[in-house]
Image (tube, rainbow, N blue to C red; front, top):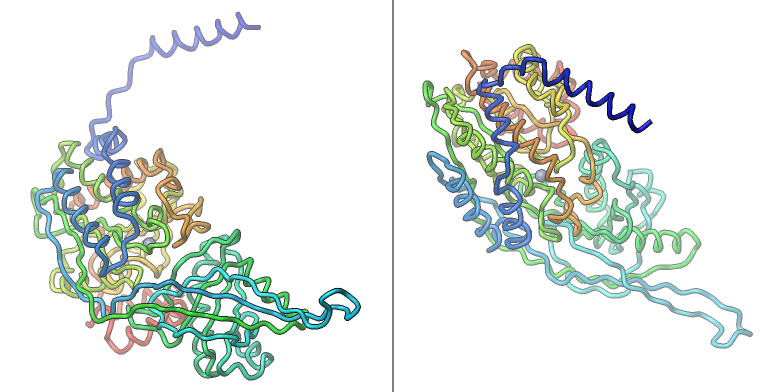
Length: 506
Ligand SMILES: [Zn+2]
C-alpha cells in the first residue's frame, strides 16, 4: 500500500516537473496581492493599537495616541504624505463606576427557622449605554418588565413612571439581528420617555455575562434618559422573579461624565496618482472604538489593514494612475461623525472620487462587496474582483447599507464598496469586553489586506472612473430601486435626506 502511494506521487511529481512552468503573473494587481501576503508589521501594529494603546473613545488620551499611531504607521508604510483633518463631536462622554443591585422578597413557611418574609439581594452586572445621561444614585426603585418594549408591552405593564424598565432582547447571532438591535432601541426609548420611566435596563444580547457598550443616539448627542445594559443572566433572573409574582427593586447609580464639544481627527495618508493625481480612490476604516475591550475586531484590525494595504502597494513598486487616500476615520461609533465631516468638507471635489472602499466587520472571511445600490458599476466591478476569487471573494450586492463610513459618500453619489464578511466571531464580541487582540484571525486578515489593496489599485487604474457621481435625483432613485427607503427611515436618516441636511443637494 505504502509503495503504491509513493509511486503514485512520484509519477504526479514527474508530470509536474516535465510540464512548462506557467509564466509568472506580473500584472500590477498580482504584484500588489503578492506584496500584501508577505510578512509585514500588521500584527505588531495591531498589538500597539489594541494591547498598548487600548480602547479608543474620541476625547480620551488613548484616542490621541491612536491618531499618533496612525500617522507614524502610515509614514513607516511609505506614504507620500500624511495629515490629519479635524472635526467636532458635540459632547464628550465617559462612564463612571456604574453600580446596580436588585432585591426581592419571598415568603417562607412560618414554621421554618427564620420564617416569614425574606429579603434577598444580588449584584446586577451593568454598564451605562454610551452617550446616555448620568443618574444620581437611586435606591429601592421598582423594576418593571416591559417585554420587548413595544407599545402593547408598555400598555400591559401599566404605570412605569419613576420606575426602571427591563427590556428583553434576543441573542445576537446574525447581521440581521445586529441591525434589528439598532433599529429597535430608539422606539423603546421614545415610549420610555413618554411614560416617564426613571431608567431603561436592556438585557445584554450576549450570553455568559458579556457586557458591551453601544450608543442609541444618532450623531453624538446626549440621549434622553439614563440607560444600562445588564448582563443577560442577571436580566433574566429579574425577569423570572417578576414573572413568578415576586416584586423586584433596584439600586442604581450611573455617574457618567458628560462634557462639552470634543475635537477629533481623521488621519489621511496618500499615494499620489501618477497620471490623474486630482482624482482619488479612498480606502477607509474607523480608528476609534469602544473601550470595554480594546476594539480589535471593531475596528482595530481593519485600521491596521488600511495601513498595511498602503505598505503593500508601495512595496509592489506599482504607480497607481489616480491618487489613493487611506483614511482612518474617527467618531464612527458616535454616529459616522468623522466620515460625515470628511464627505462634507470635501464635497466640492467628490466629482473626482473614483470609489470608496470600507472594511468594518472584523476578520471574518470577505465574501464580496456591497456596492451601494449602484447597478451601473456591477459589470466593471465583477471584472475587478475576478483576481480576488482566489480568496473566495465573488459576490457583489447591489444594496445600500447603513452603519459604516461609506455612508455619507454613498449619499453624495460616490460609488462605494463595503466589504461583506462572514460573521465569524464578530457578533459575540461586538463592542464587548471580549473584543481583544486574541480574537483576530491574522491569516484571514492578510488576505483582506491583499483584497483591499488590489481593489484600490484597480479602481485607481481604470481608464475611466468606475461610475459617475450620481445627482440628488439619481441617488433617490437608487434608494427606491434598492428598497432602501424603509431602512433609511428606520435609521432616522430619511428626514435629513429629504430636508437636504444630509447627502447631495442637487
Ligand atoms: Zn465598526
